[in-house]
Image (cartoon, rainbow, N blue to C red; front, side, top):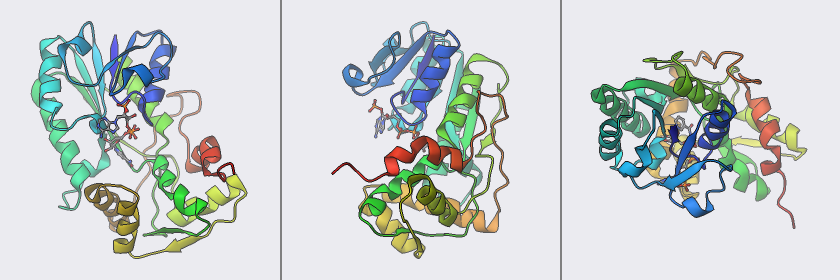
Amino acid sequence: MYLVTGATGNVGAHIVTGLLTTGADVRATSRNPATAGLPAGVDVVSALPGRHMFTGVRAVFLNPATMHDTAEAFLQQAVEAGVRRIVLLSSSSVLDDHPANYTGILHRDLEQSIAATGLERTFLRAGMFAANTRRWVPQINAGGPVRAAYGQVRIAPLHERDLAAAAVRALVSDDLLGAAPVLTGPELVTPAEQVRLIAQATGRAIRFEEVEPPAARDLMTAQGLPPRIAGSLLRYYERALSEPIHPTPVPAGYDRDSPRGYQRWISDHAAEFRPPAP
Ligand SMILES: NC(=O)c1ccc[n+]([C@@H]2O[C@H](COP(=O)([O-])OP(=O)(O)OC[C@H]3O[C@@H](n4cnc5c(N)ncnc54)[C@H](OP(=O)(O)O)[C@@H]3O)[C@@H](O)[C@H]2O)c1
């Protein structure tokens, strides 16, 4: 039995599907198990930490988005219940000591807590998600340009399905045991180029407009992103200017289509960027 936290989300849903494909038994957490909408056969339980969720579980996928001061209790219960392995969705930001890097600090603390349990572990240090560009949809639907900072910085956005494929590999095999790979997409692309690819995939006329980082931060927080997360994302771009990103994608063969570049991501998600129905 594998336990997937954050199973209804961007990465977790693909991990659930990937595990089911291997024939594994899957338990999944959600704050709303009744409406989680996960595939038949998945044992969906409440996300509130409790021993019930670990019964019979061999390995856990831990998504930090589901942890709020509950990580220590979660890990202690996992150890007590006999869980053998934790696979953490961490970030490459753990390698950046900058104080504005809130996400990196959070993930580094989690990595240390997991290491202290002595359990088998894998830390998947994900780079910038391709899915972050979903934040641009409201600006596009408002008819304006996409306003963002660091338009010419080269990043290698990570498709959630590649990350999920790595997570499945880390859960069911020993290939990534003890490893902490930095995972990115296979190709470098700038935010301005991403906007061009969105325009191409959707047939919409969309322009990119570069704004200064403080203005970009205001745009992100106006959309509801917590300021510390907005700051971490901007810091990721800023760092990529001085420390260029060298893509470290998941190997070909992790699943049928890996690794996937941004063009593949926007092709998979083009419908989300098309105009809403009138
Ligand atoms: N964005 C990036 O570029 C990036 C890069 C590296 C690492 N990361 C890390 O990746 C994680 C996000 O992964 P994701 O995109 O797969 O997550 P997600 O889709 O945002 O969330 C996963 C699930 O977690 C639950 N959840 C969401 N917000 C929650 C909250 N405030 N409290 C409790 N549960 C919550 C929801 O499930 P229910 O509603 O069913 O409970 C949601 O479906 C974050 O920890 C982030 O730091 C992100």
